[in-house]
Image (cartoon, rainbow, N blue to C red):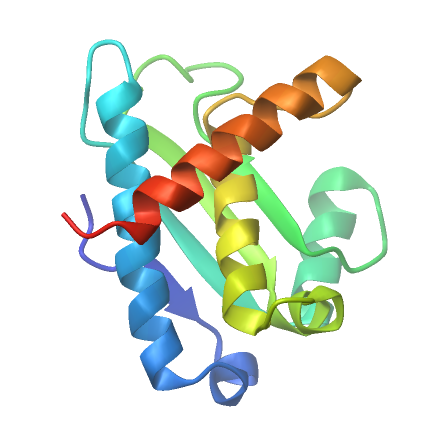
Length: 153
């Protein structure tokens, strides 16, 4: 797996404390590793997360989802579409708006960012929330990933 799991745009670098960035890197890395152990067969998954601002995520949302508004998290899955089965270990990328996360945060920014990492990771793993049943399954997996990521290995 790439050593650099978390990228932070200059536009938001001052919004997340350096200690929280290191916690995020470790926590997200453990979540990805746990997700890989659950794969059949188990594998070392590759993904990364990018922390950005509302302007950038709005542009991505507009260009890739035809929705010209900022959002909290986007997931760009590499397992979907033509050729998606060629490299099953490559999940794709998670992009998170720190600005939107800060507005939504109820338990603190770091907790919100980690929840959004888990949410995006679930999308990369194929979970969705179009129906109540799908949302329940996705939320259960998010809770599991957050717990697995919070434990030290």
